[in-house]
Length: 244
Image (cartoon, rainbow, N blue to C red; front, top):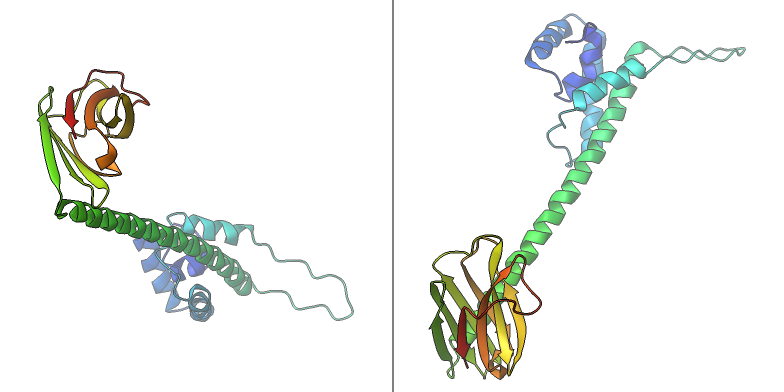
């Protein structure tokens, strides 16, 4: 706790004091007209500055306020026929604390911007997931849907649903367990002897549903077990092959 209870004006208004300091300062307020006036002025300034961007003060706010107060020095008036009145310690503390409010508001605005970007990112992910789900439903409800499946040598099953009317297909992999030792399942579409990656699963992942545009033009779908994070071309024997 600081030795100068007057210096707690700014931290008190910004709720940057601990319980002991709050209790001591509120006792002090009962007998100090200057501090009561400062509190009222600074609260009004904080409301105008923060508007609706204010949030919970950052953990370092209290120390920043006290540092600003400690570093603020009263300027010596320049010689002049009519010297300007000295700035009172109360006004200096108010200016220092208000400067911290401005800095805190800037930090709050930055946090708001980060949160707003996160919301936009999450919304984009959700919209992409909904779009993919709609495409999968369109394939699976197509009147010309053809479904084929094969067991995985490693345990489990791969199912391929394909529709020429939608010019797309859905690959559904359900393995008994994920590969070990830094390996992952990887899906391939085959056109003759030319494999094209349809995506590798994440390490530790044993199931997935993938929509593949243009799948009806392929001759088959293969599954291999590849090193993380997947391979440009198959490096291991096929764990399953579904002919289309």
